Image: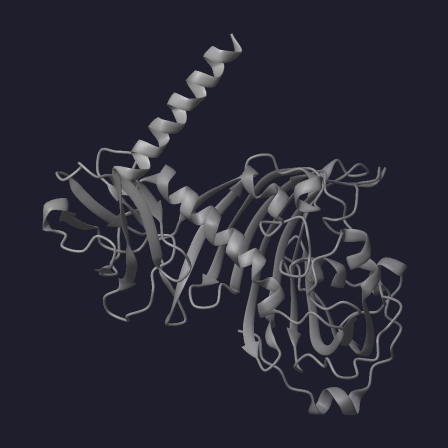
Length: 397
């Protein structure tokens, strides 16, 4: 029995050795014909076979085919590019190929979804791995303008504005949510409201929700690698962002739980993320959320029973934009729009509360001497400073 096993293994090794000797290598680079830039994660292979590979971030590819495979068509394809084909018998040097493909607009409906999904998952993984290179990894502080407008049943909005100092003891290092919460703090330095604060709720801000919109800093979102496999990804028809080549990826979460999103009672979770092809940096994220029975204090807070007002549904739209400065990429604009429908048990009616919240950094990140804060100003008692607001000017488009 043992002799038979040894003999079988020997035959297998001989077969493998024979295959190695009877195979040839196809390798080279694939580039954008217009720019000369390498095309990452392109699919290169032999039509009708399993022989092929995906290009690296530098556009390099290599794979083996049987030495006697002389007939067939080599193809190359990439999201946002025209297809490339050449007959094997026309290839003169299979180990030094230089493929050039033309960018094109395309109908997403005709793209091979399963093939592109593998490419897009690799794009997402590379973007996650590049966070440590593209975003500050040390303690930092910055100042931002905060604005929150809230209206009920289409009444004139209550407007709360602040200047906020924000500090982070670990910058953009990826951490668990508990450590992230303890390391990131803020305080209100200037405040202006068009309404009188009569209750604790009147004076509370939604800064925590806005900070959660910074998906590069926070966990439990599309950039959380352990849960990436739970997302459906598809390439958007857009291939640039502000004139620069970019991956634009639509995503949706199959099972939008709190563990995966940091949001309670989700029924819908879908977004679009823009990633620089040059640096793998996240440039922009758009997110659309629906939740049932939300908390009036924010989506990261569990709902509690309220005998008078019971939220029954909520919709959120989020936009986060990142810009590059001397210290790397950093948030330049955060916007959150929400619409919450609430029932009032005393009147047996419904009311709709709509809000728009903004956070605009007004200074670049200070990583030299950040002066870290230890608390969060959930409730602001800073008095109105007329001389400051008379000279303060910021526009939100």
